[in-house]
Image 1 (cartoon, rainbow, N blue to C red):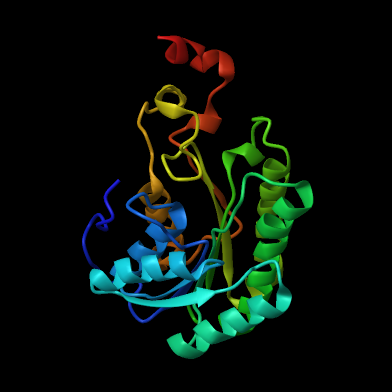
Image 2 (image 1 turned 180 degrees about the vertical axis):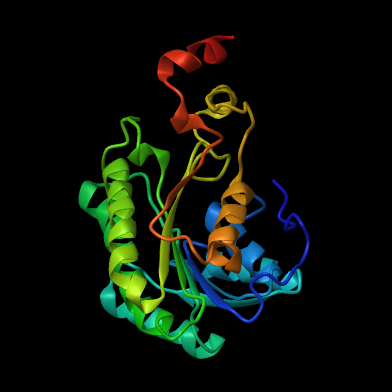
Length: 263
């Protein structure tokens, strides 16, 4: 997958400051966080790249700056309240505010408590730390990232359960923060060809491509474009929504897809 932002440069997020968690990268294969940060920057936002790894955060910032965007590296372990508060305050101070937050961080493997600490608690901590800054924005938008494993059975254990919590937090924050003018929505990615989703080799990759209604392989940019819509003015009247970005995977039954998977 190319690191060049598809669609070139634009101004849909001009004048906004956006913080994307889990946005670090390594090498040519971008995850959803890095792609989202790069696209936001290409559309005019001052973009914060929040990651636990300084090297990964710097790599995405270099990518953004190399394409003419403005990026700020923000390094923190989002499972620690103090570290999260400092990170969000640092970004808001350097960027001149905070308008858009993308809670993209996620781990799929590990012990139950650790997975929940990152996926669920981390999402909560970053959101709560961002709230005081978001209430000052006239274009405040929070975009959470869950997974279709939170909607369908995949045997994902703690990953599915913790990302299910992200779905619940989305509706709860949308209700509580609506009077503050803050929109809160959730993207539900399907089988994307990303570092976290590219498992099992070529055979599994082909099966994932066949397992959606379009028969098309998705990648990190597909999620990034959906995030851009929810971040921008076109979605000003949308909040509390869960939007699958899965080429219809969750709209079909296993029996209905059986013929495609075996052909």
